[in-house]
Length: 117
Image (cartoon, rainbow, N blue to C red; front, side, top):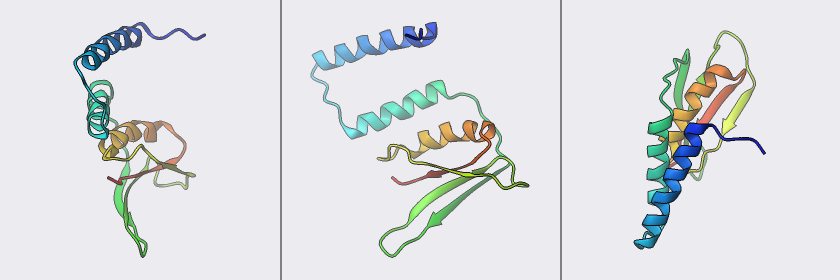
């Protein structure tokens, strides 16, 4: 089995201890605190800010509903395959966008993140 990075192993131990304490105190998981937890994790661990040459917010429309999207293009002077990233939803798009942006610079693809709430 692959060994975890020491920083991640330490963080996971701390997280599990905190989770045990919260559960013992009656904590009940909800979509709201899952979303907030994901946002906090992302703010803590995704520090690297990457400049993407072209980023555009747009809207995919339909008769029933519209879906906001964010399109990243790291190399707008050449066509790249699309990669559509479906995040967990429930308002998690700020975290998803923060994670997609650095990846867009490294992937030989043009990522699109759905910004549904």
